[in-house]
Length: 115
Length: 108
Image (cartoon, rainbow over all chains, first blue to last red; front, side, top):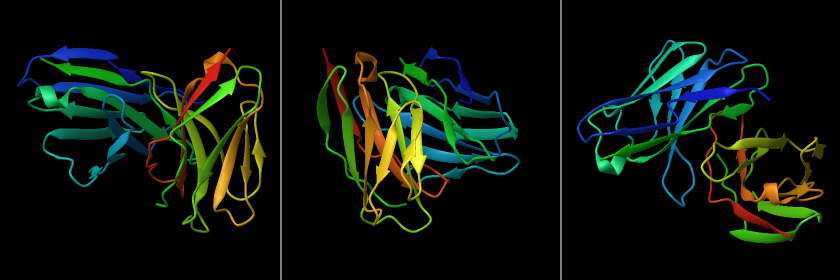
């Protein structure tokens, strides 16, 4: 199957700093990528839809000024958690949609810990 | 997107078939049924998807009822490595909305 990578896999940062997470589709050009977060023992929650060359679409309740999404190329989307706080500590997962099949492939996730 | 209902957990003996049910009574005509699984602390892994016909691949089989209101994912010979959370999702190829899923425990 197609491969989606994320970097970094783990990050620890101090409260008040910003953290950038990268999501890359390695086998296909993804015009659409998605960002999810997952708290312990919970399901994945969709945060936003990232569209190449246009603004991201955020789900209800997700602060767009706090979670900045940039989809500058067909293979890369980035999520920046600005002014991170301990409650932002979570598992962040991206997915990329293959435009040829509409199948979605998920990255391995990024574990963010804010101290 | 239509919602799905899955049992919270299931156990299966190693080597036996695991049959995971999913109800999606409000599915609309252009929505597919997708199955993903998530092993602890990893990203979800695609298993299979279908519209109305039964589907089979190297991982699993998907049986969709004629009225499309429910489906069953079949892992023909479950192994310990199949222990995971299995998510049944319906959608039209756009965003995927995850429910709580079924925790499948394969036991030796």
